[in-house]
Structure formats: structure tokens, C-alpha cells
Length: 104
Image 1 (tube, rainbow, N blue to C red):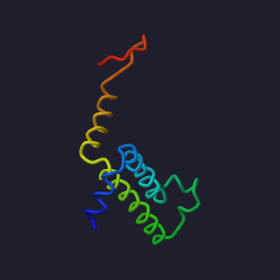
Image 2: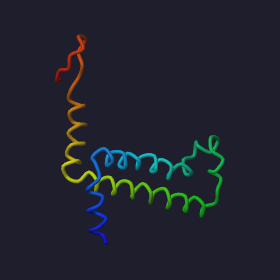
Image 3: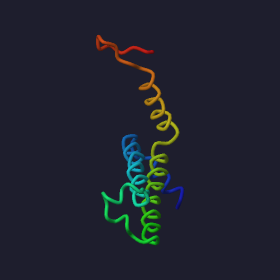
């Protein structure tokens, strides 16, 4: 069963993998939202019980991990290298005043 799911996920596109991987970021933020002290004025649900906060964290953190591992599985090794090279390339290039790209 595990191999069947892994095979099905690997057939999905690179773009789908990036989207699924990006979905883990808001889930991580939402999972820790009730325990941030300065949020109490902005969001009334922070006054929930300790059990409620634990349950909130388990659900949203679990979703974040599911999106993270699902996205990595969809991307695979080659897709993960592609994402890493995109961020490295973006960090190493700058744009000069004439609008042409150059490296630092």
C-alpha cells in the first residue's frame, strides 16, 4: 500500500509538488498561532484551554508535516534539486541600473 501511494504521488507534476510543499508553511504558522503571546488581542481563540491548544497544534502540525512529506515525495530527488538551484540562482544574480542581469 505504501509503495502504491508513493508511486501515485511520483506521477504528479513538478508544479503540483511545489504547491503542496508551499502549503506546509501556512499550516506551520497556524499551528503555533494560539501560543504566540501578542496574538491574544488579535484573535479571541487564543484563550482556549490547554487541551484545545494541544488539539489545535496536533491537527495543524500534522497537516503541515503531511504537506511537507507529500510535496517532497511528489518532487522527488530531481525536482528537489531544481528547487534548490532556483533559490541559489536567484541569490547569486542581481540587476544593474541598465536592467540587465549580472552576477556579483
